Every structure is written in structure tokens, then in C-alpha cells.
Length: 122
Image (cartoon, rainbow, N blue to C red; front, side):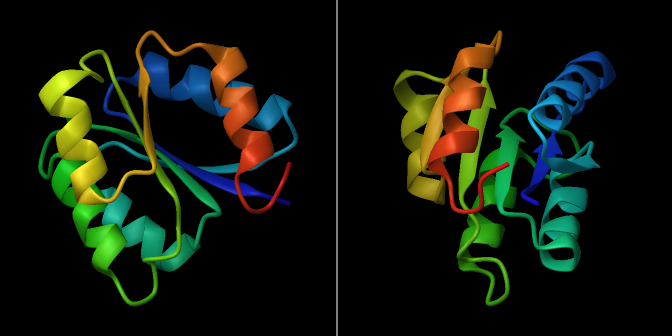
């Protein structure tokens, strides 16, 4: 079963993403800030990470960078999610190691597509 780490500081958005991903047959783990995301990526070894960029404690760009450079986590695809996922924000996310960037509010058809395209399928 595919495991998706959902990193989002807004409870409602995180819960909605988790419910949707689980409804597609995946398991989920949750983080509310970048520091938790880096730790959970190493301990949970998810198949995919959905990373908000504007996070407390450690922002999504730096968390993505650390995951991308981590010995145990560099293979995990990270998809950035942000209301600002264009221009400089998108460039910074891709430079940090994100594979792509999804605009908020999240299009659930795009999330379904992600779940089909990345390594372990739900």
C-alpha cells in the first residue's frame, strides 16, 4: 500500500487531503511543519510527500531541500502545494528538489493523477 506524507499547517486542509488520499486506497502520515516533515520522511519512508511551502518552524522549501539531500530520503518524490505555486515560489520549490508544484485550492483530479504517476500506486 502506498504511503503519502501530507505536510500542511492548516488542520482543515490537511484533514481534507488525508481523507481524499485515503479514499483512494493509500495510507497517510501527517506533519504540521517542516521539521516534522523531515523527521517523518526519515522514519515513515513514505512513497510520496505533498508539501505545503508556507509552513511554521521550518518552511517547505528548506524541508524539501533537506529531504532531497537526505541519505535515507533523497529518493522520495516531493510535490509542493501552495496558493503561490507560480513564478518565484514555483522556481524555488523545484530548485529545492520538488518534482512539481500544485496550486491551492487543490484540484483533486490533479491529486488523483499524482497518485497514479508516482512509484507505488494506491
